Image (cartoon, rainbow, N blue to C red; front, side):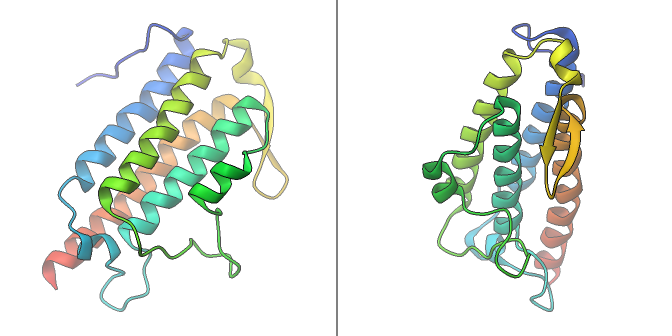
Length: 168
């Protein structure tokens, strides 16, 4: 297997984007057979984030990066649709009234927006610094890499939840 480089992007951007795209496709394969009960399962002691929460969280984080790349605020309509990064307690928000299909469809929209923004980036743009979470800063290069890394991190949690669910 190899990374698919998008020929509508600058070479370095295409390589970074390919890591995100490939990781996202693996995520969709990981959750394609998840049923509604498993989607909301929170582990053996009911203390973990569910697969549904993790999918929404990944979509929301990626949406924030899309708008960082655009150097814009997220429109209120999208904020309302996707919800906050964290709840009032600083945790990944609880979700219950959704399906795997709805979560993937809404995440697909974010991935489409992300791809479009990447087609607009030049090699030099990768060095631009943007603000994120609590006043930290990072280059756009790091931000794109982080999207893929963050997804892989939570894919491990999803894999664990699937294992625990099957064992229970």
